[in-house]
Image (tube, rainbow, N blue to C red; front, side, top):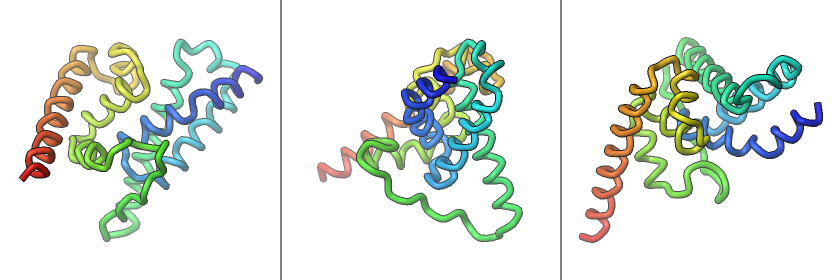
Length: 160
């Protein structure tokens, strides 16, 4: 179990940031990542052989966060509360980037989170999300294009 502790200590922040970028709700992400690591710990003897255990944790955390969102939507008819502020080392480093990420479609946010923040390959990202590798590339391309446009618009507005 020592190798689990090493992965947990070294990669929990990466998992948190990746899921936060995809989901955007800090309290839900904290719970989801903690639950995903707890499940990984329970399954560690078999998960140890997984080619990318961090990818497994991120996928489980994304699924937990989505399930929680669905459950809250059924229980409450009010909109989700706005996410709380993030610390300097947590989440996207700039509010403009965070807002631009939130504006992306869900699948594009997930691809950006897994490919860029979690540093997974396109193949690993595709396997985790259940989509083709080429589709990962398309979503990433569109997401980056949208982010560039959104951020250049913000810069142009700031110059006026």
